[in-house]
Length: 403
Image (cartoon, rainbow, N blue to C red):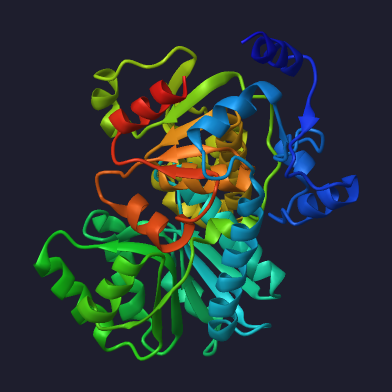
């Protein structure tokens, strides 16, 4: 006990490299260069010294008890490049280098950090492979005539990935079906999605909308979604990891300020109150973050479009400049939030993914739709940074045993 207390005291004064850290500063710089979101790490207020491979001695003892199979973080460094390679293998076959491409469906609906991490990953991959991105839009600003003119006859339409494929997000699904019906001769690639239909009639309508398109390919980010795409929708489909992995390993923003950070969906907040949190725990969600200036600017422009549609052509150029900046601001916010915790407990898929990219040990349980477990079992089940539990109460028991 005395030795542990002395380690904790030392940890507050100094930072020492984790045993799994790379031996040289040059290796750390190479990893930081891999974070190619189109901006330099400094723009996200990241610091080389505050690397994901720097951890605290006082936290290591607790992490070894919570993650007994492998307390080091080395396996995460193997999982991430492997998933990026899988993404490359799938997309390079579908989107040849030098293609003209449109990316549709920029997320403007909420503060979901995961949606913006996906958007940045998609943009990063397209730029990295020299794809000419000729048009972007959100669900409300898509102009089909302008889109067709920008694409030309050989252009490729890419639809933003995420978890909105199906009848749980009807607006997104209607937009997707409209694009497929409007562009029957263009190649259309649906970036990796979780697919779920609660009502068979909605699945039948989607199948009818997609069935006659000869150049549609749907990428599924888990095995369950792949089965629905192939056998339910009857479309060409392939398995592909979430596009946020294209961002690669990210440097941790700051020292942890709490022992345990619960990133829990707000619709589950009532259940959270029934649990007694252990000392040093904090409960939060993406929606607790405050929008940055680019976000407020974009929302202001959207309001102006509704109020003054005749001046839309003047606002369009301004709006085209802001999506990537908005997504970077949200990613920055999410990384700051996750960096608060020595250990993360979450039912959010992208809190799980970003914790992997940041090198933060975390405990994961399923959300109400089941997409977290299906993704975990498809791609990240063997990663040493992650521990699966079946319920929040089981996560609590894990901390009680470790304490």
